[in-house]
Length: 583
Ligand code: ADP
Ligand code: TPW
Ligand code: MG
Image 1 (cartoon, rainbow, N blue to C red):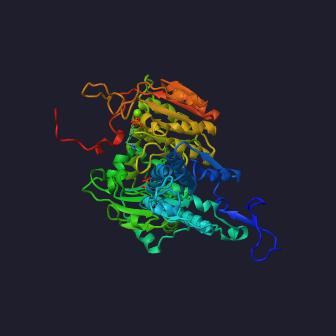
Image 2 (cartoon, rainbow, N blue to C red; image 1 turned 90 degrees about the vertical axis):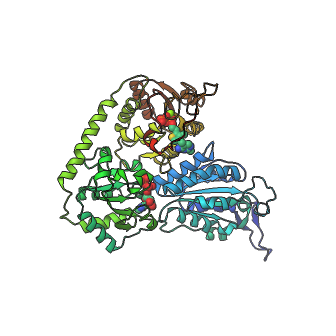
Image 3 (cartoon, rainbow, N blue to C red; image 1 turned 60 degrees about the vertical axis):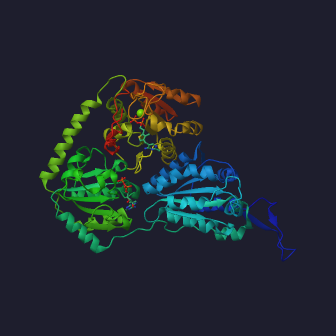
Protein backbone atom coordinates (compact mmCIF):
# COMPACT_ATOMS: atom_id res chain seq x y z
CA UNK A 1 0.00 0.00 0.00
CA UNK A 2 1.54 3.32 -1.05
CA UNK A 3 1.16 6.57 0.81
CA UNK A 4 -0.90 9.36 -0.80
CA UNK A 5 0.52 11.40 -3.66
CA UNK A 6 1.94 13.99 -1.30
CA UNK A 7 4.05 11.36 0.40
CA UNK A 8 6.55 11.07 -2.38
CA UNK A 9 10.05 12.38 -2.57
CA UNK A 10 12.31 13.32 -5.47
CA UNK A 11 15.21 10.95 -5.97
CA UNK A 12 18.11 12.75 -4.27
CA UNK A 13 20.63 11.45 -6.78
CA UNK A 14 18.78 12.65 -9.84
CA UNK A 15 16.65 15.78 -9.72
CA UNK A 16 14.87 14.92 -12.97
CA UNK A 17 13.85 11.43 -11.91
CA UNK A 18 10.18 10.59 -11.17
CA UNK A 19 9.27 11.12 -7.48
CA UNK A 20 9.43 7.81 -5.57
CA UNK A 21 6.43 6.30 -3.83
CA UNK A 22 6.90 6.02 -0.07
CA UNK A 23 5.49 3.78 2.59
CA UNK A 24 5.76 3.84 6.37
CA UNK A 25 5.61 1.67 9.46
CA UNK A 26 1.80 1.83 9.69
CA UNK A 27 1.34 0.62 6.13
CA UNK A 28 4.08 -1.98 6.32
CA UNK A 29 2.62 -3.57 9.43
CA UNK A 30 -0.85 -3.71 7.90
CA UNK A 31 0.54 -5.08 4.63
CA UNK A 32 2.52 -7.71 6.53
CA UNK A 33 -0.61 -8.81 8.41
CA UNK A 34 -2.58 -9.02 5.17
CA UNK A 35 0.16 -10.92 3.39
CA UNK A 36 -0.04 -13.52 6.15
CA UNK A 37 -3.82 -13.74 5.80
CA UNK A 38 -4.62 -12.21 9.15
CA UNK A 39 -8.21 -11.03 8.90
CA UNK A 40 -9.22 -9.91 12.39
CA UNK A 41 -7.66 -7.72 15.06
CA UNK A 42 -8.89 -7.64 18.68
CA UNK A 43 -7.88 -4.35 20.27
CA UNK A 44 -8.28 -1.32 22.48
CA UNK A 45 -7.16 1.98 20.85
CA UNK A 46 -5.15 4.93 22.17
CA UNK A 47 -1.69 6.46 21.75
CA UNK A 48 0.24 5.23 19.75
CA UNK A 49 -2.06 2.77 17.93
CA UNK A 50 -5.31 4.67 17.23
CA UNK A 51 -4.38 5.50 13.66
CA UNK A 52 -2.98 2.02 13.16
CA UNK A 53 -6.40 0.60 14.03
CA UNK A 54 -8.24 3.12 11.83
CA UNK A 55 -5.96 2.35 8.91
CA UNK A 56 -6.24 -1.40 9.54
CA UNK A 57 -10.00 -1.11 9.30
CA UNK A 58 -9.70 1.04 6.19
CA UNK A 59 -7.50 -1.64 4.64
CA UNK A 60 -10.35 -4.14 4.95
CA UNK A 61 -9.37 -6.10 8.04
CA UNK A 62 -11.98 -6.55 10.75
CA UNK A 63 -11.13 -4.58 13.89
CA UNK A 64 -13.01 -5.42 17.08
CA UNK A 65 -12.60 -2.69 19.61
CA UNK A 66 -13.03 -3.84 23.23
CA UNK A 67 -13.60 -2.06 26.54
CA UNK A 68 -10.61 -3.69 28.24
CA UNK A 69 -7.45 -5.27 26.81
CA UNK A 70 -7.76 -8.46 28.85
CA UNK A 71 -10.87 -9.40 26.93
CA UNK A 72 -9.41 -8.42 23.57
CA UNK A 73 -6.52 -10.70 24.53
CA UNK A 74 -8.74 -13.61 25.59
CA UNK A 75 -10.62 -13.20 22.31
CA UNK A 76 -7.39 -13.30 20.30
CA UNK A 77 -6.22 -16.44 22.12
CA UNK A 78 -9.51 -18.21 21.48
CA UNK A 79 -9.34 -17.18 17.82
CA UNK A 80 -5.92 -18.88 17.83
CA UNK A 81 -7.34 -22.06 19.37
CA UNK A 82 -10.20 -22.20 16.87
CA UNK A 83 -8.27 -21.42 13.69
CA UNK A 84 -4.66 -22.62 14.26
CA UNK A 85 -3.59 -19.14 13.16
CA UNK A 86 -2.26 -16.67 15.74
CA UNK A 87 -5.02 -14.45 17.10
CA UNK A 88 -3.87 -10.83 17.09
CA UNK A 89 -4.43 -8.46 19.99
CA UNK A 90 -3.30 -4.83 19.83
CA UNK A 91 -2.87 -2.62 22.87
CA UNK A 92 -1.43 0.72 23.88
CA UNK A 93 1.66 1.05 26.06
CA UNK A 94 2.21 0.37 29.79
CA UNK A 95 -1.30 0.02 31.32
CA UNK A 96 -2.90 -1.34 28.14
CA UNK A 97 0.03 -3.69 27.70
CA UNK A 98 -0.25 -4.92 31.29
CA UNK A 99 -4.01 -5.38 30.94
CA UNK A 100 -3.41 -7.61 27.92
CA UNK A 101 -0.58 -9.55 29.51
CA UNK A 102 -2.83 -11.81 31.59
CA UNK A 103 -4.43 -13.05 28.39
CA UNK A 104 -1.05 -13.51 26.70
CA UNK A 105 0.24 -15.56 29.63
CA UNK A 106 -3.01 -17.54 29.67
CA UNK A 107 -2.65 -18.29 25.94
CA UNK A 108 0.85 -19.61 26.59
CA UNK A 109 -0.38 -21.73 29.50
CA UNK A 110 -3.15 -23.16 27.31
CA UNK A 111 -0.77 -23.72 24.35
CA UNK A 112 -2.80 -21.45 22.05
CA UNK A 113 -1.18 -19.26 19.40
CA UNK A 114 -1.60 -15.55 19.89
CA UNK A 115 0.40 -12.41 19.18
CA UNK A 116 0.02 -9.34 21.34
CA UNK A 117 1.27 -6.27 19.53
CA UNK A 118 1.66 -3.33 21.89
CA UNK A 119 2.64 0.20 21.09
CA UNK A 120 5.45 1.47 23.30
CA UNK A 121 7.02 4.79 24.20
CA UNK A 122 10.28 6.44 23.03
CA UNK A 123 13.05 3.83 23.39
CA UNK A 124 15.73 6.38 24.26
CA UNK A 125 13.58 7.94 26.97
CA UNK A 126 12.34 4.64 28.38
CA UNK A 127 15.84 3.18 28.59
CA UNK A 128 17.15 6.24 30.45
CA UNK A 129 14.02 6.12 32.63
CA UNK A 130 13.35 9.78 31.98
CA UNK A 131 9.62 9.55 32.57
CA UNK A 132 8.03 9.26 29.13
CA UNK A 133 4.28 9.08 28.63
CA UNK A 134 3.33 5.53 29.70
CA UNK A 135 6.96 4.60 30.16
CA UNK A 136 7.71 0.92 30.64
CA UNK A 137 10.29 -1.59 29.45
CA UNK A 138 7.54 -3.79 28.06
CA UNK A 139 9.77 -6.27 26.26
CA UNK A 140 11.59 -7.21 29.46
CA UNK A 141 8.33 -7.63 31.35
CA UNK A 142 6.67 -9.71 28.65
CA UNK A 143 9.59 -12.12 28.18
CA UNK A 144 9.06 -14.47 31.15
CA UNK A 145 5.30 -14.56 30.55
CA UNK A 146 5.13 -15.75 26.98
CA UNK A 147 6.68 -18.16 24.52
CA UNK A 148 8.73 -15.50 22.71
CA UNK A 149 9.05 -11.71 22.74
CA UNK A 150 10.49 -9.42 20.07
CA UNK A 151 10.85 -5.72 19.40
CA UNK A 152 11.02 -4.09 15.97
CA UNK A 153 13.08 -0.93 15.72
CA UNK A 154 13.34 -0.34 11.96
CA UNK A 155 10.63 -0.18 9.32
CA UNK A 156 12.58 -2.54 7.08
CA UNK A 157 12.38 -5.21 9.84
CA UNK A 158 8.59 -5.16 10.16
CA UNK A 159 8.19 -7.98 7.65
CA UNK A 160 10.69 -10.29 9.29
CA UNK A 161 9.56 -9.27 12.78
CA UNK A 162 5.96 -10.28 12.15
CA UNK A 163 7.07 -13.47 10.38
CA UNK A 164 9.16 -14.40 13.41
CA UNK A 165 6.22 -13.73 15.73
CA UNK A 166 3.86 -15.86 13.62
CA UNK A 167 6.24 -18.80 13.43
CA UNK A 168 7.01 -18.64 17.13
CA UNK A 169 3.30 -18.61 17.98
CA UNK A 170 2.17 -21.59 15.88
CA UNK A 171 5.14 -23.91 15.41
CA UNK A 172 5.86 -26.73 17.86
CA UNK A 173 3.82 -26.22 21.04
CA UNK A 174 1.78 -23.10 20.26
CA UNK A 175 1.84 -20.15 22.62
CA UNK A 176 1.63 -16.42 23.15
CA UNK A 177 4.13 -14.08 21.51
CA UNK A 178 4.76 -10.47 22.36
CA UNK A 179 5.70 -7.98 19.65
CA UNK A 180 6.87 -4.56 20.81
CA UNK A 181 6.14 -1.75 18.38
CA UNK A 182 7.55 1.63 19.47
CA UNK A 183 5.34 4.50 18.31
CA UNK A 184 8.25 5.99 16.38
CA UNK A 185 8.50 2.85 14.24
CA UNK A 186 5.03 3.41 12.83
CA UNK A 187 6.03 6.81 11.49
CA UNK A 188 9.31 5.65 9.90
CA UNK A 189 9.29 6.15 6.15
CA UNK A 190 10.89 3.99 3.48
CA UNK A 191 10.76 3.46 -0.24
CA UNK A 192 7.54 1.68 -1.13
CA UNK A 193 9.09 -0.91 -3.46
CA UNK A 194 11.81 -1.73 -0.96
CA UNK A 195 9.20 -1.92 1.75
CA UNK A 196 7.09 -4.35 -0.28
CA UNK A 197 10.17 -6.48 -0.92
CA UNK A 198 10.94 -6.56 2.82
CA UNK A 199 7.66 -8.31 3.71
CA UNK A 200 7.72 -12.02 4.47
CA UNK A 201 4.94 -14.53 3.96
CA UNK A 202 5.55 -17.36 6.39
CA UNK A 203 5.84 -20.65 4.50
CA UNK A 204 4.50 -23.72 6.31
CA UNK A 205 4.29 -21.99 9.71
CA UNK A 206 3.57 -25.19 11.68
CA UNK A 207 5.36 -28.02 9.88
CA UNK A 208 4.18 -31.60 10.41
CA UNK A 209 6.14 -33.33 13.14
CA UNK A 210 6.47 -37.02 12.26
CA UNK A 211 7.19 -39.45 15.13
CA UNK A 212 10.20 -41.75 15.03
CA UNK A 213 9.26 -45.25 13.72
CA UNK A 214 10.78 -47.00 16.74
CA UNK A 215 8.71 -44.80 19.07
CA UNK A 216 5.59 -45.93 17.20
CA UNK A 217 6.53 -49.60 17.51
CA UNK A 218 7.27 -49.17 21.21
CA UNK A 219 3.91 -47.49 21.79
CA UNK A 220 2.00 -50.22 19.92
CA UNK A 221 3.76 -52.88 21.99
CA UNK A 222 2.72 -51.15 25.22
CA UNK A 223 -0.87 -50.76 24.01
CA UNK A 224 -1.05 -54.42 22.92
CA UNK A 225 -0.06 -55.50 26.42
CA UNK A 226 -2.98 -53.64 28.02
CA UNK A 227 -5.92 -55.35 29.67
CA UNK A 228 -7.69 -52.14 30.67
CA UNK A 229 -6.59 -49.44 28.24
CA UNK A 230 -7.88 -45.87 28.21
CA UNK A 231 -7.45 -42.90 25.86
CA UNK A 232 -7.40 -39.37 27.26
CA UNK A 233 -8.16 -36.64 24.72
CA UNK A 234 -7.02 -33.12 25.57
CA UNK A 235 -7.45 -29.69 24.09
CA UNK A 236 -4.21 -30.21 22.14
CA UNK A 237 -6.05 -32.95 20.21
CA UNK A 238 -8.91 -30.54 19.56
CA UNK A 239 -6.46 -27.84 18.47
CA UNK A 240 -4.71 -30.22 16.06
CA UNK A 241 -7.80 -30.45 13.80
CA UNK A 242 -7.07 -34.10 13.08
CA UNK A 243 -10.68 -34.99 13.88
CA UNK A 244 -11.09 -37.91 11.46
CA UNK A 245 -7.88 -39.54 12.64
CA UNK A 246 -8.88 -39.17 16.29
CA UNK A 247 -12.19 -40.85 15.57
CA UNK A 248 -10.54 -43.61 13.51
CA UNK A 249 -7.99 -44.27 16.23
CA UNK A 250 -10.64 -44.54 18.94
CA UNK A 251 -12.96 -46.69 16.86
CA UNK A 252 -10.29 -48.96 15.35
CA UNK A 253 -8.61 -49.49 18.71
CA UNK A 254 -11.93 -49.99 20.48
CA UNK A 255 -10.45 -48.30 23.56
CA UNK A 256 -12.72 -46.22 25.82
CA UNK A 257 -11.80 -42.53 25.88
CA UNK A 258 -12.07 -39.74 28.40
CA UNK A 259 -12.35 -36.23 26.93
CA UNK A 260 -10.85 -33.34 28.88
CA UNK A 261 -13.31 -30.43 28.97
CA UNK A 262 -12.28 -28.71 25.74
CA UNK A 263 -11.84 -32.02 23.91
CA UNK A 264 -15.53 -32.77 24.45
CA UNK A 265 -17.20 -33.18 21.07
CA UNK A 266 -14.10 -34.43 19.24
CA UNK A 267 -16.28 -37.51 19.22
CA UNK A 268 -19.89 -36.98 20.30
CA UNK A 269 -20.28 -37.30 24.08
CA UNK A 270 -22.95 -39.93 23.37
CA UNK A 271 -20.39 -42.15 21.57
CA UNK A 272 -20.44 -45.72 22.91
CA UNK A 273 -16.73 -45.56 23.74
CA UNK A 274 -17.00 -42.31 25.71
CA UNK A 275 -16.01 -42.91 29.31
CA UNK A 276 -16.78 -39.34 30.45
CA UNK A 277 -19.48 -40.34 32.92
CA UNK A 278 -17.28 -43.17 34.27
CA UNK A 279 -14.28 -40.93 34.92
CA UNK A 280 -13.42 -42.10 38.44
CA UNK A 281 -13.58 -45.74 37.45
CA UNK A 282 -11.41 -45.47 34.34
CA UNK A 283 -8.72 -43.36 36.00
CA UNK A 284 -8.50 -45.72 38.94
CA UNK A 285 -8.54 -49.00 37.03
CA UNK A 286 -6.90 -48.47 33.66
CA UNK A 287 -3.50 -50.12 33.22
CA UNK A 288 -2.35 -48.34 30.04
CA UNK A 289 -3.35 -44.76 29.27
CA UNK A 290 -2.80 -43.11 25.90
CA UNK A 291 -2.61 -39.35 26.37
CA UNK A 292 -3.43 -37.44 23.18
CA UNK A 293 -2.71 -33.70 23.41
CA UNK A 294 -3.34 -33.64 27.17
CA UNK A 295 -0.95 -32.98 30.04
CA UNK A 296 -0.64 -34.91 33.29
CA UNK A 297 -1.09 -31.72 35.32
CA UNK A 298 -3.34 -30.92 38.28
CA UNK A 299 -6.43 -31.60 36.19
CA UNK A 300 -5.39 -35.26 36.08
CA UNK A 301 -3.89 -35.43 39.58
CA UNK A 302 -0.42 -35.43 38.01
CA UNK A 303 -0.87 -39.03 36.84
CA UNK A 304 -0.43 -40.53 40.30
CA UNK A 305 -1.99 -41.15 43.68
CA UNK A 306 -5.38 -42.36 44.83
CA UNK A 307 -7.28 -41.13 41.78
CA UNK A 308 -5.06 -43.35 39.66
CA UNK A 309 -5.62 -46.33 41.87
CA UNK A 310 -2.22 -46.23 43.61
CA UNK A 311 -0.36 -48.43 44.51
CA UNK A 312 -1.49 -50.06 41.23
CA UNK A 313 0.71 -48.47 38.58
CA UNK A 314 -0.39 -47.09 35.25
CA UNK A 315 1.71 -47.16 32.09
CA UNK A 316 1.51 -44.06 29.96
CA UNK A 317 1.80 -43.61 26.22
CA UNK A 318 1.88 -39.90 25.45
CA UNK A 319 1.39 -38.07 22.17
CA UNK A 320 2.63 -34.50 22.37
CA UNK A 321 4.38 -32.09 20.06
CA UNK A 322 6.50 -30.80 22.96
CA UNK A 323 9.32 -33.22 23.86
CA UNK A 324 9.80 -31.65 27.31
CA UNK A 325 6.27 -32.64 28.25
CA UNK A 326 7.36 -36.29 28.51
CA UNK A 327 8.16 -37.45 32.08
CA UNK A 328 6.98 -34.09 33.44
CA UNK A 329 5.12 -35.77 36.30
CA UNK A 330 5.51 -39.53 35.96
CA UNK A 331 7.48 -41.88 33.74
CA UNK A 332 6.17 -42.09 30.19
CA UNK A 333 6.60 -45.67 29.01
CA UNK A 334 6.16 -44.76 25.35
CA UNK A 335 6.70 -41.13 24.41
CA UNK A 336 5.43 -40.18 20.95
CA UNK A 337 6.77 -36.78 20.06
CA UNK A 338 4.93 -35.39 17.08
CA UNK A 339 1.76 -33.69 15.96
CA UNK A 340 -1.46 -35.52 16.73
CA UNK A 341 -2.33 -36.09 13.07
CA UNK A 342 1.05 -37.53 12.09
CA UNK A 343 1.31 -39.73 15.19
CA UNK A 344 -2.19 -41.14 14.85
CA UNK A 345 -1.62 -41.88 11.15
CA UNK A 346 1.52 -43.80 12.07
CA UNK A 347 -0.21 -45.70 14.89
CA UNK A 348 -3.16 -46.60 12.66
CA UNK A 349 -0.82 -47.85 9.95
CA UNK A 350 0.98 -49.99 12.53
CA UNK A 351 -2.27 -51.38 13.98
CA UNK A 352 -3.29 -52.88 10.65
CA UNK A 353 -6.52 -54.77 9.91
CA UNK A 354 -6.33 -57.45 12.59
CA UNK A 355 -6.09 -55.22 15.63
CA UNK A 356 -7.37 -56.95 18.76
CA UNK A 357 -9.85 -54.80 20.67
CA UNK A 358 -9.61 -54.61 24.48
CA UNK A 359 -11.13 -57.41 26.60
CA UNK A 360 -14.90 -57.16 26.84
CA UNK A 361 -14.96 -57.40 30.60
CA UNK A 362 -13.17 -54.01 30.65
CA UNK A 363 -15.25 -52.22 28.03
CA UNK A 364 -18.38 -53.81 29.49
CA UNK A 365 -17.54 -52.60 33.02
CA UNK A 366 -16.90 -49.07 31.75
CA UNK A 367 -20.17 -49.05 29.84
CA UNK A 368 -22.17 -50.37 32.80
CA UNK A 369 -20.75 -47.69 35.11
CA UNK A 370 -21.37 -45.00 32.55
CA UNK A 371 -24.97 -46.05 31.87
CA UNK A 372 -25.73 -46.13 35.57
CA UNK A 373 -24.29 -42.66 36.12
CA UNK A 374 -26.08 -41.18 33.10
CA UNK A 375 -29.35 -42.62 34.30
CA UNK A 376 -28.87 -41.29 37.80
CA UNK A 377 -28.10 -37.82 36.44
CA UNK A 378 -31.05 -37.81 34.02
CA UNK A 379 -33.58 -37.74 36.84
CA UNK A 380 -31.89 -34.70 38.44
CA UNK A 381 -32.01 -32.79 35.16
CA UNK A 382 -35.81 -32.82 35.30
CA UNK A 383 -35.81 -30.76 38.52
CA UNK A 384 -38.25 -27.96 37.81
CA UNK A 385 -37.80 -26.10 41.10
CA UNK A 386 -37.81 -22.32 41.30
CA UNK A 387 -35.37 -20.83 42.16
CA UNK A 388 -33.45 -23.32 40.06
CA UNK A 389 -30.66 -25.60 41.16
CA UNK A 390 -27.74 -26.23 38.78
CA UNK A 391 -29.10 -29.50 37.46
CA UNK A 392 -32.53 -28.09 36.65
CA UNK A 393 -31.15 -25.03 34.87
CA UNK A 394 -28.52 -27.03 33.01
CA UNK A 395 -31.06 -29.66 32.00
CA UNK A 396 -32.76 -26.88 30.02
CA UNK A 397 -29.47 -25.70 28.47
CA UNK A 398 -28.48 -29.28 27.60
CA UNK A 399 -31.64 -29.45 25.48
CA UNK A 400 -30.85 -26.11 23.79
CA UNK A 401 -27.35 -27.26 22.80
CA UNK A 402 -28.58 -30.76 21.86
CA UNK A 403 -30.94 -29.14 19.38
CA UNK A 404 -28.16 -26.94 17.93
CA UNK A 405 -25.01 -29.02 17.43
CA UNK A 406 -23.21 -26.19 15.63
CA UNK A 407 -23.68 -23.69 18.43
CA UNK A 408 -20.59 -22.60 20.36
CA UNK A 409 -20.61 -23.02 24.13
CA UNK A 410 -18.55 -20.82 26.43
CA UNK A 411 -18.46 -21.74 30.12
CA UNK A 412 -16.93 -20.31 33.29
CA UNK A 413 -17.57 -20.15 37.03
CA UNK A 414 -17.06 -22.74 39.75
CA UNK A 415 -20.25 -24.78 40.21
CA UNK A 416 -21.54 -23.28 36.98
CA UNK A 417 -18.48 -24.68 35.20
CA UNK A 418 -18.31 -28.08 36.87
CA UNK A 419 -21.98 -28.93 36.50
CA UNK A 420 -22.19 -27.62 32.91
CA UNK A 421 -19.11 -29.57 31.86
CA UNK A 422 -20.62 -32.86 32.93
CA UNK A 423 -24.24 -32.14 32.01
CA UNK A 424 -24.07 -30.48 28.59
CA UNK A 425 -23.14 -32.98 25.87
CA UNK A 426 -21.10 -31.74 22.93
CA UNK A 427 -21.36 -33.43 19.58
CA UNK A 428 -18.85 -31.61 17.39
CA UNK A 429 -15.17 -30.67 17.81
CA UNK A 430 -14.02 -27.28 19.15
CA UNK A 431 -17.48 -26.08 20.18
CA UNK A 432 -16.66 -25.75 23.87
CA UNK A 433 -14.44 -23.02 25.28
CA UNK A 434 -13.80 -22.68 28.97
CA UNK A 435 -11.46 -21.55 31.74
CA UNK A 436 -8.60 -23.76 30.50
CA UNK A 437 -5.52 -24.90 32.37
CA UNK A 438 -5.46 -22.06 34.89
CA UNK A 439 -9.17 -22.03 35.66
CA UNK A 440 -9.16 -18.30 35.07
CA UNK A 441 -12.32 -16.27 35.65
CA UNK A 442 -13.23 -13.62 33.09
CA UNK A 443 -12.63 -15.50 29.83
CA UNK A 444 -16.35 -15.54 29.05
CA UNK A 445 -17.15 -12.45 27.04
CA UNK A 446 -13.86 -12.32 25.10
CA UNK A 447 -14.21 -16.01 24.25
CA UNK A 448 -17.84 -15.58 23.22
CA UNK A 449 -16.94 -12.66 20.97
CA UNK A 450 -14.13 -14.60 19.27
CA UNK A 451 -16.36 -17.66 18.94
CA UNK A 452 -19.04 -15.60 17.20
CA UNK A 453 -16.61 -13.69 14.99
CA UNK A 454 -14.47 -16.66 13.96
CA UNK A 455 -17.26 -19.20 13.36
CA UNK A 456 -20.34 -17.09 12.55
CA UNK A 457 -22.38 -19.55 14.64
CA UNK A 458 -24.63 -18.63 17.56
CA UNK A 459 -22.90 -18.66 20.93
CA UNK A 460 -24.23 -19.62 24.35
CA UNK A 461 -22.12 -18.32 27.24
CA UNK A 462 -22.95 -20.02 30.54
CA UNK A 463 -21.49 -17.80 33.26
CA UNK A 464 -21.32 -17.87 37.03
CA UNK A 465 -22.35 -14.46 38.36
CA UNK A 466 -18.84 -13.94 39.76
CA UNK A 467 -17.18 -15.08 36.53
CA UNK A 468 -19.40 -12.73 34.54
CA UNK A 469 -18.38 -9.83 36.75
CA UNK A 470 -14.79 -10.10 35.52
CA UNK A 471 -15.79 -9.34 31.94
CA UNK A 472 -19.36 -8.00 32.05
CA UNK A 473 -18.64 -4.63 30.46
CA UNK A 474 -17.90 -6.39 27.18
CA UNK A 475 -21.65 -6.91 26.70
CA UNK A 476 -21.50 -3.39 25.26
CA UNK A 477 -19.02 -4.73 22.68
CA UNK A 478 -21.41 -7.60 21.95
CA UNK A 479 -24.27 -5.15 21.41
CA UNK A 480 -22.16 -2.72 19.39
CA UNK A 481 -21.15 -5.40 16.90
CA UNK A 482 -24.58 -7.07 17.10
CA UNK A 483 -23.05 -10.49 17.70
CA UNK A 484 -25.21 -13.64 17.97
CA UNK A 485 -24.39 -14.23 21.64
CA UNK A 486 -26.73 -15.31 24.40
CA UNK A 487 -25.21 -14.88 27.86
CA UNK A 488 -26.83 -16.80 30.69
CA UNK A 489 -25.75 -15.57 34.12
CA UNK A 490 -26.20 -18.21 36.82
CA UNK A 491 -27.20 -15.79 39.53
CA UNK A 492 -26.76 -17.38 42.94
CA UNK A 493 -25.81 -14.06 44.59
CA UNK A 494 -22.19 -15.00 45.02
CA UNK A 495 -19.05 -17.03 44.72
CA UNK A 496 -19.90 -20.75 45.12
CA UNK A 497 -22.94 -19.82 47.21
CA UNK A 498 -24.82 -16.63 48.00
CA UNK A 499 -25.45 -17.48 51.62
CA UNK A 500 -22.19 -16.62 53.39
CA UNK A 501 -22.45 -14.28 56.36
CA UNK A 502 -19.93 -11.99 58.01
CA UNK A 503 -19.25 -13.87 61.27
CA UNK A 504 -18.69 -10.65 63.23
CA UNK A 505 -22.21 -9.56 62.47
CA UNK A 506 -20.84 -6.12 61.48
CA UNK A 507 -22.04 -4.07 58.53
CA UNK A 508 -19.93 -5.46 55.69
CA UNK A 509 -21.20 -8.45 53.75
CA UNK A 510 -19.12 -11.67 53.50
CA UNK A 511 -16.33 -11.51 50.87
CA UNK A 512 -18.12 -14.34 49.05
CA UNK A 513 -21.46 -12.65 48.28
CA UNK A 514 -22.90 -10.01 45.94
CA UNK A 515 -25.93 -7.74 45.87
CA UNK A 516 -28.93 -10.01 46.20
CA UNK A 517 -31.03 -10.68 43.11
CA UNK A 518 -28.91 -8.29 41.01
CA UNK A 519 -30.60 -7.49 37.69
CA UNK A 520 -27.86 -8.40 35.21
CA UNK A 521 -30.60 -8.49 32.57
CA UNK A 522 -31.07 -4.73 32.92
CA UNK A 523 -27.38 -4.16 32.15
CA UNK A 524 -27.97 -5.68 28.73
CA UNK A 525 -30.97 -3.46 28.13
CA UNK A 526 -28.79 -0.42 28.79
CA UNK A 527 -26.94 -1.19 25.55
CA UNK A 528 -30.00 -2.03 23.47
CA UNK A 529 -29.75 -5.81 23.88
CA UNK A 530 -32.44 -8.20 25.10
CA UNK A 531 -32.47 -8.70 28.85
CA UNK A 532 -34.61 -11.44 30.38
CA UNK A 533 -35.04 -12.78 33.92
CA UNK A 534 -35.75 -16.51 34.08
CA UNK A 535 -36.72 -18.13 37.36
CA UNK A 536 -37.54 -21.69 36.27
CA UNK A 537 -36.16 -24.18 33.71
CA UNK A 538 -39.09 -23.77 31.30
CA UNK A 539 -38.65 -20.00 31.15
CA UNK A 540 -34.93 -20.47 30.74
CA UNK A 541 -35.32 -23.00 27.92
CA UNK A 542 -37.74 -20.77 26.06
CA UNK A 543 -35.71 -17.57 26.44
CA UNK A 544 -32.40 -19.19 25.43
CA UNK A 545 -33.93 -21.02 22.45
CA UNK A 546 -35.45 -17.79 21.19
CA UNK A 547 -32.19 -15.88 21.62
CA UNK A 548 -30.16 -18.57 19.83
CA UNK A 549 -32.58 -18.59 16.92
CA UNK A 550 -32.81 -14.80 16.70
CA UNK A 551 -29.02 -14.45 16.87
CA UNK A 552 -29.41 -11.16 18.73
CA UNK A 553 -27.39 -10.03 21.76
CA UNK A 554 -29.24 -11.33 24.81
CA UNK A 555 -28.54 -11.71 28.51
CA UNK A 556 -30.62 -14.05 30.60
CA UNK A 557 -30.49 -13.65 34.34
CA UNK A 558 -31.07 -17.20 35.58
CA UNK A 559 -32.16 -17.19 39.20
CA UNK A 560 -30.27 -19.98 40.99
CA UNK A 561 -30.87 -21.11 44.56
CA UNK A 562 -28.07 -19.36 46.54
CA UNK A 563 -27.67 -22.50 48.63
CA UNK A 564 -27.32 -24.93 45.71
CA UNK A 565 -23.57 -24.75 45.03
CA UNK A 566 -20.65 -26.04 47.03
CA UNK A 567 -17.30 -24.53 47.99
CA UNK A 568 -15.08 -24.26 44.88
CA UNK A 569 -17.35 -26.61 42.91
CA UNK A 570 -15.50 -29.90 42.32
CA UNK A 571 -12.11 -28.73 43.56
CA UNK A 572 -12.84 -27.77 47.16
CA UNK A 573 -10.06 -30.18 48.19
CA UNK A 574 -7.50 -27.68 46.83
CA UNK A 575 -8.39 -25.09 49.50
CA UNK A 576 -5.77 -24.94 52.26
CA UNK A 577 -7.30 -25.58 55.67
CA UNK A 578 -6.45 -23.61 58.77
CA UNK A 579 -5.62 -25.93 61.66
CA UNK A 580 -5.70 -23.26 64.33
CA UNK A 581 -9.19 -22.42 65.49
CA UNK A 582 -9.26 -18.99 67.13
CA UNK A 583 -12.29 -17.48 68.75
P1 ADP B 1 -6.09 -30.49 28.57
O1 ADP B 1 -6.17 -29.32 29.49
O2 ADP B 1 -7.27 -30.59 27.67
O3 ADP B 1 -5.76 -31.75 29.28
P2 ADP B 1 -3.49 -29.50 27.91
O4 ADP B 1 -3.60 -28.07 27.59
O5 ADP B 1 -3.03 -29.85 29.27
O6 ADP B 1 -4.86 -30.22 27.56
O7 ADP B 1 -2.51 -30.21 26.90
C1 ADP B 1 -2.44 -29.85 25.56
C2 ADP B 1 -1.16 -30.49 25.03
O8 ADP B 1 -1.29 -30.61 23.62
C3 ADP B 1 0.08 -29.65 25.28
O9 ADP B 1 1.04 -30.41 26.00
C4 ADP B 1 0.57 -29.29 23.88
O10 ADP B 1 1.99 -29.32 23.77
C5 ADP B 1 -0.05 -30.37 23.03
N1 ADP B 1 -0.29 -30.01 21.63
C6 ADP B 1 -0.76 -28.84 21.15
N2 ADP B 1 -0.91 -28.92 19.82
C7 ADP B 1 -0.52 -30.15 19.46
C8 ADP B 1 -0.44 -30.85 18.22
N3 ADP B 1 -0.82 -30.28 17.08
N4 ADP B 1 0.02 -32.11 18.24
C9 ADP B 1 0.42 -32.70 19.41
N5 ADP B 1 0.35 -32.10 20.59
C10 ADP B 1 -0.12 -30.85 20.63
C1 TPW C 1 -8.84 -14.28 37.65
C2 TPW C 1 -10.90 -17.54 41.93
C3 TPW C 1 -12.49 -19.36 41.15
S1 TPW C 1 -14.11 -19.63 40.79
C4 TPW C 1 -14.57 -18.07 41.20
C5 TPW C 1 -13.47 -17.33 41.62
C6 TPW C 1 -13.54 -15.91 42.03
C7 TPW C 1 -15.99 -17.60 41.07
C8 TPW C 1 -17.03 -18.65 41.31
O1 TPW C 1 -18.29 -18.07 41.41
P1 TPW C 1 -19.29 -18.03 40.22
O2 TPW C 1 -19.72 -19.57 40.09
O3 TPW C 1 -18.61 -17.66 38.96
O4 TPW C 1 -20.42 -17.17 40.60
P2 TPW C 1 -20.68 -20.40 41.09
O5 TPW C 1 -21.67 -21.05 40.19
O6 TPW C 1 -19.84 -21.40 41.81
O7 TPW C 1 -21.33 -19.42 42.04
N1 TPW C 1 -9.64 -14.57 39.96
C9 TPW C 1 -9.35 -15.14 38.76
N2 TPW C 1 -9.54 -16.43 38.52
C10 TPW C 1 -9.99 -17.23 39.52
N3 TPW C 1 -10.11 -18.53 39.26
C11 TPW C 1 -10.34 -16.69 40.78
C12 TPW C 1 -10.14 -15.33 40.94
C13 TPW C 1 -12.26 -18.08 41.58
MG1 MG D 1 -22.14 -17.57 41.64
